[in-house]
Length: 307
Length: 93
Image 1 (cartoon, chains in turn purple, red):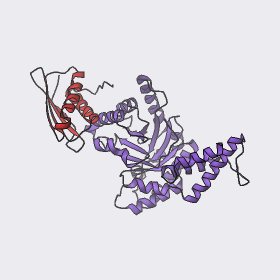
Image 2 (tube, rainbow over the protein chains, first blue to last red):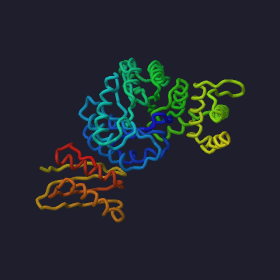
Image 3 (cartoon, rainbow over the protein chains, first blue to last red):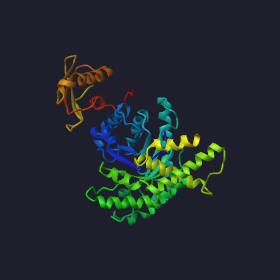
Image 4 (cartoon, chains in turn brown, cyan):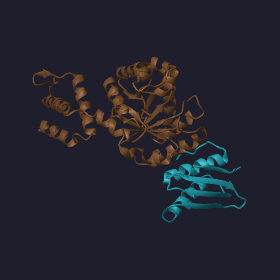
């Protein structure tokens, strides 16, 4: 599975709704998150699990990353959810309400057991953890580094706000510490940071403002609950033309240095260090994903450089 | 052994399935579907195949299809059979 990929949008799909489970990918989200937890009534947990299992096994989701939010292992459903989705080939298991590194370790152990039993490559199923409490925020870095399967941590703001004994505001001031802690922990661990959902579908301006905020804070992307939210996130995350031009030049300089066998990359007399190169690569990935430049343009540079 | 049970919904893209035990040794499937003419035979076959995998006989199946795809039919028939047999033991294939 690809740990390092674009995750600007993770589209939520209720696990017991066949239409949404089968079609969630057609709206262009980078990842879809099928939910077996909060959106499924207790009496329907068994049916939703089978629905997600069969959809994962037989539907063609193209290049979309497939994530399933399972029930906590402390409930009677969590184990069976992991059993089903790992066997079905899910890319990422999303753990809800993660509070300690031990939660991740236990999930990892169960995934490893199922991978062995069904013949799937051990380690091929990734984990992302949703942090939804004060304790989870305090332990964010320990959670982020608890398993080599970890690909990201996400904020679950509703439960977190309730746990703080406050409520969510439009400005999100109550979430600031949690958001920054999650981004810092994710960066320190070398994994992704995903922001919480924005539930008011009638307030697209408020939604756009929140995207600008979380982009500036350093998040990789956001969980979305409606297809209408996807293009707004993608547009705000799309790099500007000047930035793309600069990044293309950096990539070109890197390719020239590689062709010459040089370990030092320089552009217009200035040395390019690794963080600048990584940022340029991410900008190019975003520009391609946003449809601003095509892969062909990039290949053009490669051909030119190699020639 | 087998009790009456149901699974699924009447929402678009879903399928609602009820099963109940009958005395005769047969699998009796009654299907109502908006696409019965095109896909009725296929839907029935998926249902019969899944029942046969469990060696069940003497079962009446009432199905209302709302345009479910094969994977949904398979998921719902297995959910209802688990409920009717009072088991959560799933044979993964």
